[in-house]
Length: 430
Image 1 (cartoon, one colour):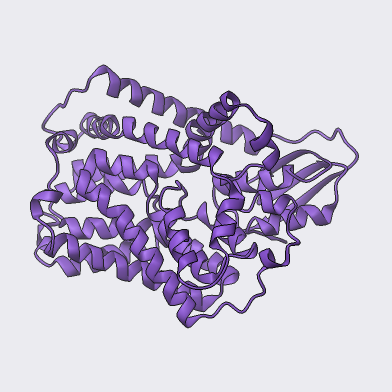
Image 2: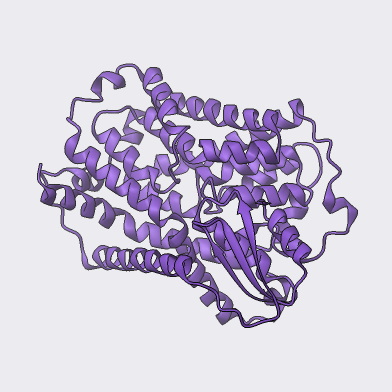
């Protein structure tokens, strides 16, 4: 196989996905701009099963990956959400989202696109109920004390938040522009790397894996699902990046149920998130969280293979053509334009992030301090910390360097307030 065949396969998959990915990013921007953080924290506080259900319902449409959801969930927990609701949010949110649902429909069809949010809801509910039952939350909820009404409350949802002042005084046109900028710039920067990795892996599987390589596993569906668990749980793959990989595996002979297990288990659990969660919500709750992800992924994988019509999960004609290197599938001007736009956004976010990481803040104020931060793992984490610190009175400039795990803050500010803003966002200050 030469490079031209690989490039053609990669471009075909990208053309198939790009319109749906861009649509999902735009909807994600609208959710970010118009869903108030205080609404989420209020509904997730309290005991019982109702906050657990609300947490799963709130988490399903949010386009947060497994590392991006960590500061959001930890912040919710510190602001009063129960461990059960926090666990439910942690399970349901990274498994799906408006962007990944749209992309799933584009490559894997409507049944898979419908099954993903349903499985995420069930998994979140099961995990939250188990945590409430076996790991009683003994903490005194901060939200009940009525004392947390400062910057930490406005940023309780991390990167999904904005202040009340902007809500009340910014015009609708400015907010719509902010939504577009978040969806097409910040979201692309957050998940772009993993989307590219998923596309490249999918193209490699399509071109280089022999057609009969996975057929033997398809004869043992449960074994194939367990193999997907072993592969998916330790590694990191985002909800959108896992889609082309799953499609390529199915086209090579893997049973749809095993591919569904990859779609659900891969984005929800990885070693990095487990380590952070162990410190934030406790080892017992973290163990229940991981088991809930595994059990529900296997359960729905078995449902896909044994209880639902096999015709529902056959690859559509355009998806098959998009990954067949023997077939040169042509696309119209709309798909091609979307692909060009997505490639431009990915390139822009890559260079913008590198410039941000390598720029040195210029001292132009009363005080400059650097804070070492533990727990940041992606661009989403960086933006969460920047927003939290920028909301502190007296802060004139903040630069968060992901590679150096540090934040440099300029202005006449209270250092303790900076530390509190960072910890309330779900990270630790060294």
